[in-house]
Image 1 (cartoon, one colour):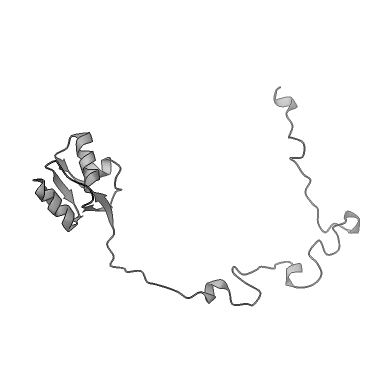
Image 2 (cartoon, rainbow, N blue to C red; image 1 turned 120 degrees about the vertical axis):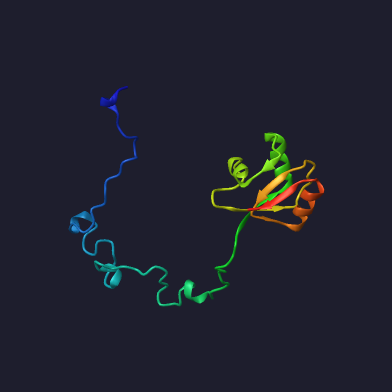
Length: 148
């Protein structure tokens, strides 16, 4: 087999329907558009969401809720994750940069340490925010916290 005898699979190529090319074609006259009305004419354009004059869905359903512009969103990292990271990388100080390098947070993401899990190591932890339970657990293990 070479490039000279390649051909498409049987049935994969179909001839284009030539619409509106006289009565002999079988697709002449109204050119498969039916008779009369806006849809049969050139330049017809249906509005997005138009339901034939019925009140469209996006107008029937009420608007709900609001977006708080002052919301501060944090990426949550648990103590169990920090413990695991500290043992794997042999760290005594964990910063936001360490979490970024480990793939736990993205750039410009604020980090909040949550108190799920236990902490056995004495760690120095830097983050943007801490939950009360996390603060207590870190200080109980002999570690320190620093808010960045």
